Length: 263
Image 1: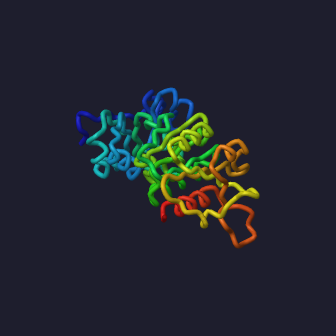
Image 2 (image 1 turned 45 degrees about the vertical axis):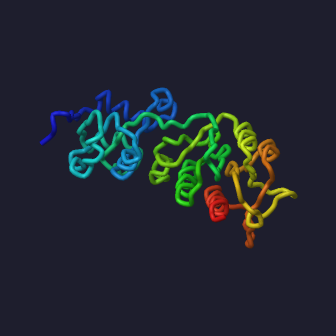
Image 3 (image 1 turned 180 degrees about the horizontal axis):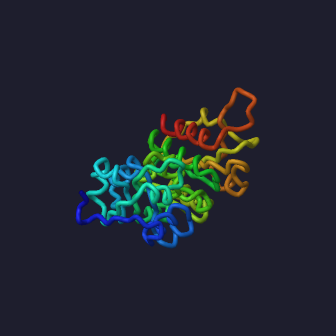
């Protein structure tokens, strides 16, 4: 039996369903509407427990009892069919519950006065890498992340899934100019290290990462631009014993995060 607050939807032409599906599939539309969608019980509950309030929840009947925590906080609840769940989802196996939230408050001002450990991501391309880095940053204790605006959308389905909820709990700033963000950090007495191979690069394991410190991770294929490297305090490398020329960006970032936080 449904609560009087629930609305039943069976038509694939329903405008609310179409809107939700478009929010899932289109970064441009998410930006225009100031909204994003989470899918699955765990991710929806993570968002709610982190203080976000669902504006709308789309849910199949079988999930109603399982998602009471989410439903109690939802402003609007739509009970949908399995067919409509598949229409909204971007996965091959829809999880039967979707929540619509207002866009995360990721401002452009680098206010880091209480931060001691910061990671910057410059022009990354892979949503999975972004999500994994956010997950590692939260796990090891980074105070906050700064992303260049050309990185993958934080609210894309793939990023949201791969963060395992970390995107809701970790302070993250999105900036248009990563070099200006580096300069601002330096003005706040941060040592900012560029992860880049050069004649001047120092193994990160040899640094005493005390006080305020930050590190910059670059694009998967091209690394950091020379302008970004020059803006930093110094370049650093991760020592490697094998013949591999480089590490995956998420792996490299996780190692750098560990070195920054263990000290």
